[in-house]
Length: 139
Image (cartoon, rainbow, N blue to C red; front, side, top):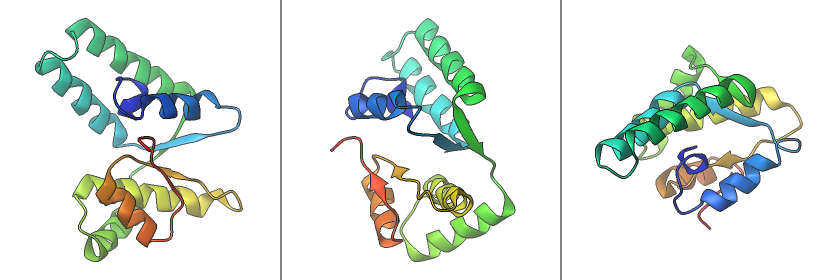
C-alpha cells in the first residue's frame, strides 16, 4: 500500500492497478493502517518526507479506507491461519497476518479469485508455495 502514497519502485504499477477501481476491488487487512503509518512516519523522521506531507498522506489513506478499500478485520481465524503459515514458511509475524488476511478474503470471494499484491520477495515466495496468485508491482 505504501507504493500508492510514496513514490518508490513499483508505484506506477500500483497506481495503474488502483486506478482501475471499477475493475478491481482493493482489500486490506485492518493492521495495514499500522504498517502504512509506520512506513510514512519513519520516512518523516529520516527527513525523506516533510511532516506536512506525511500528515496529508495519512489523511488521504484514512479517506481511502472509508471510501475505496475493503477492510478485512483481524479475527481469531486469521490469527490461526497466520500461525500455521509461520509453521510452514520463514515469515515475519505481520507478513504472516497479511497473507492470512488474503486467505480469508479469498475464502469469502467465491468464484472470483483475488490476487495477492506484494513486493516483499519472501512473502511472495510463501504465497506462491501456498498456490496463491500473486502480483509483484516491482516487476
